[in-house]
Structure formats: structure tokens, C-alpha cells
Length: 130
Ligand SMILES: [Zn+2]
Ligand SMILES: [Zn+2]
Image (cartoon, rainbow, N blue to C red):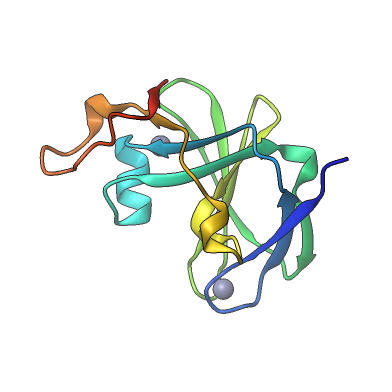
């Protein structure tokens, strides 16, 4: 039986747990993720949405329609601004892999949308592309 791992925002106001066995661990190079994360790509730890369990605090939300046309409800901490997870139409949560208490738990398995990657971004070609 699978368990869960703990995660939280930078200031500690929001605490939540998620499945310890992710569906996929994706480096997302899409433009939205670059803007939101301020980094070359976003570390997306994908789990079934029903495994995300809020333990403390109340995340703010921002709903967008992604380039794919799918609805994407982004959750973040209204105090420190940390991105926590996004709820996708498909019943999947894209959790910020850098919010996990154990930073080493996130181990990327896939690259996503490398066509949007910046020219200066070094891409790990060992990862599968989706
Ligand atoms: Zn916070
Ligand atoms: Zn993205």
C-alpha cells in the first residue's frame, strides 16, 4: 500500500500531504511555468488529485485555461506566494516538486514542451519527452 509525503509553502502557513508514488515527474518548459516559477522550467510532481490532502491553512486559487484548452486551477499561498499545486481537468494534481519536505524525493522522469524552452536552458536529454 502506498503512503504519502508532506509538503508546504515557504512561510509554513500551508501544509499538505500527497501520494509518495507519483504518476510522473515532469520538467515543464511551457511559457506559463517559466513566468510563474521564475525559473527555466517547473518541477511538476503529478499525483491523483484525490491524494492531495490539505493539513493546514487555506491556499488561494487562480483559474486559467491552458494553451491546451484545459482548465487549470492553480493553488498558491497568499502570504508568501509559493506555488503549491495545480488541479487539472483530468483529475490530476501537478504539485510543485520543490514544495516537498524531502527535496530529494522529486526525481524528474520526463521533459514537457521543450519547444518552449529558452535557448540557454540545458536540457537533460536522458529524460523521456511528452
Ligand atoms: Zn506561505
Ligand atoms: Zn507548464
